Image (cartoon, rainbow, N blue to C red; front, side, top):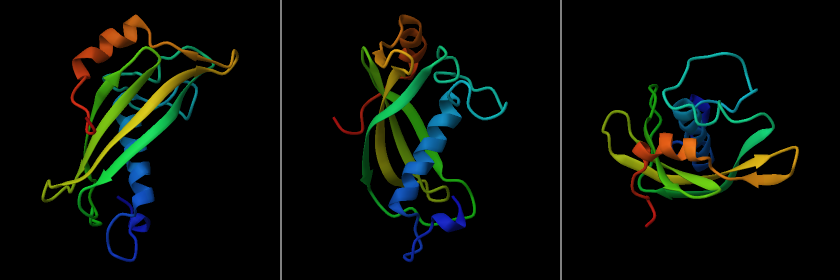
Length: 143
């Protein structure tokens, strides 16, 4: 959490929550190939090993604010998993918790589709990706 993420009420602004979700997603699954500089390897490189000209596009965000996430000068606790794995998309589930009390503050999901920039077409989730992601599939926050 950054000082500037806080709003006048002393909690993290709802718009900044989406940035926290993005950071958690990239931290868990790696940055898209060809972006940024070298960094730490992730355990499950979903995005960093995509074919050239492939983009992971956000199709939808769903966010439920359970309670305010108060600013603290330590990172929020974010749990990340795959909540749906379909033919041409995957959905990532999140729970954001207060890092001190561990109370749930936000439940969210992001649906991503893979898009080939050169052809302008959606790509199917490969059998290899499905097999690697299968152990990380859990319940949806929004059944």
